[in-house]
Image 1 (cartoon, chains in turn blue, red):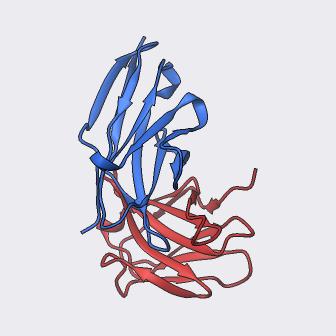
Image 2: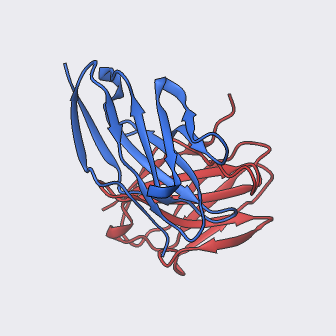
Image 3: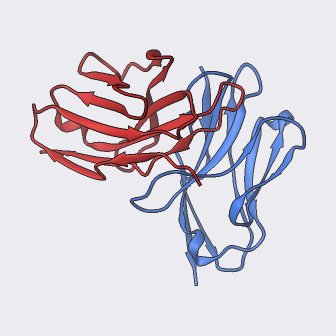
Length: 112
Length: 114
């Protein structure tokens, strides 16, 4: 069955520190991959996406993600976290024409 | 920037009542979706809709759920007889085409069944 996993339920980092959120997928073929962010009580905002080509993709708010086919991973990174980055982060995947499968989410807390 | 809009933002209903959640997808998008997120849990797919018919649905989307595109702009989710376990955030999403599958999500409707 198709699945997306995010091994870390909750991560805490200090403001200014670097961040990496992990995402792994299990699909028969390479899916399209996405990261969404959700602030408390808010909707899902698209941070970035990977369809094909360059395996390092840039997104909004200074985020980037790297696709690694050999590891079935699509990890999200940010070199310097800001307090406003505290939110829930969801990795998601879809195959052409099918619905999105979301990971369980990683909650990010930022210490001042 | 175009966006998906959902109304209402919060709906409280009594168990057994019917509710209709409304969505206005982005105007040139062709694929429409409903997802739900029970508090503290992951986002789950309910249904996708294309060319005026359901293209895929999950096992959550049983006979008490229905979707409709009553006119050229709205996309609705109806829950016929709400149960307590239907309490969740419901997200509408739309995407432009199958080869541009990024979905844009609305802000959600928080449904509380009492």
